[in-house]
Length: 110
Image 1 (cartoon, helix red, strand yellow):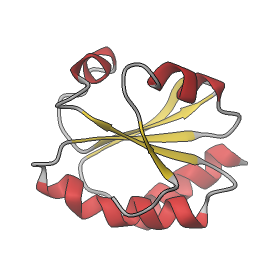
Image 2 (cartoon, one colour):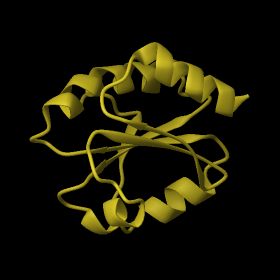
Image 3 (tube, one colour):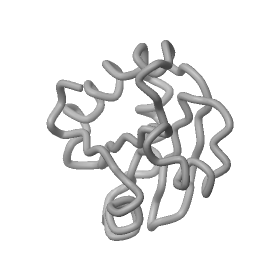
């Protein structure tokens, strides 16, 4: 992962990062072996750079953090959850376009 603006979350950091953020938080549930997860990564890196002031972008490796994936009933990856005020405000399962994600984030950031 090349963007330093994307934070990797673990079960230890997840709640504090998501609940304490004043901005919407996009969380990408992924795994290193997942092809579509690798395909969406550059989109998330671009959004992390472009929307840095408006949203926080994070990733959760489901292989290493199964309890978080279980808590949110993640059944397929990539799954993206967008949190606002610590609550799930939107969800995307599978590959999606940058424009689609950007419009969802813009709506929640305003």
